[in-house]
Length: 420
Image 1 (cartoon, rainbow, N blue to C red):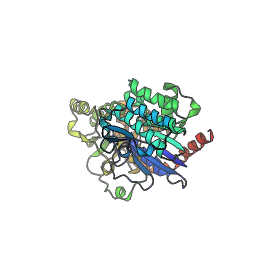
Image 2 (image 1 turned 90 degrees about the vertical axis):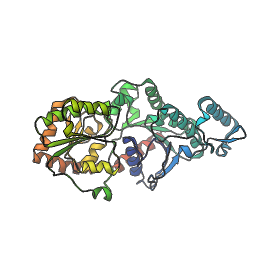
Image 3 (image 1 turned 30 degrees about the horizontal axis):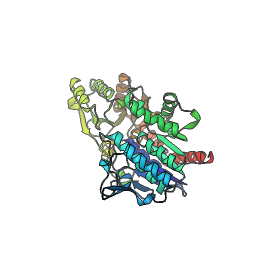
């Protein structure tokens, strides 16, 4: 079974959970002996782990040869029919700006989420048309909305079935204030796909209700977590000092509910002074949260670390007594699982996808600041409660494996192929 996957980021260069989830799923699927995955991304950096997949850089894929003022379609496409050749060139001239083409005939990509993101998404879909003609594959798999146009273009070129993977929708990111352009890309991807994978039942319901999709076409495959490496396991445990440490780690945006965390911290600190709060991450609400902490007069007990990744994340976990994820709408949320791997009891919102599979995490409504404050206070005050959730949570999360998620995805591949 050969899968051509389209993604946008991949560890170690990640800015959110999308790259982490793509990495985990592909590595889990690679345990299937007959599974062959080629992963396309806009710009590989060269230090990715390629031991279990093949990475194709869109920025390394020639689109045109430029010579003496004329543009020539790449040699890779010389076996196209005259009509296919004409259609591709018409597509390039109609939708593509040559200002992004370098001297090698490749499109340049930022490898991030730039201000001209929509242009990069369009350019990525154009490169996908070239890759679609040069690769061998049985199924197309597009991860999240940025790659849906690429997946659709590849399906149109190859006739192969398209599976899209919904890691989040704009309803999650915007608290319902949906960007029409993003919504249309998401809706188009869902409509053109042969099957839709969602990371939780919460997201599945959104896809069915908000995007008018047939329930039979939508399957939930919950995310999982990577086993801890020896490098991570060797990080010293720095808990047990005078002050307890409570941590929020993620993008500081309205989706993640950071204001509820700050308000709950103020309530906890009114009852106990021997506790410090960390907000690790960056985002458009960071300055607002700094001002809110100052307004609540807790700045001396509230620390902003900025964006953290890789080993830094686990160093924070190994210094924390409690982890909090008060997301307003979280399609899944891998970070509580990572915290629980490090023996950190977690408090998560009922509005998160991971709440569907975690029994040994405390669940509260994101807006219930009093319940959140009481839960934090209970975990830092009652050792027996902390010990119970630490031990049982660790057992639970160690059985949530990407290999199992990969087996479910393979079943979906088999289903869409047999349907054809």
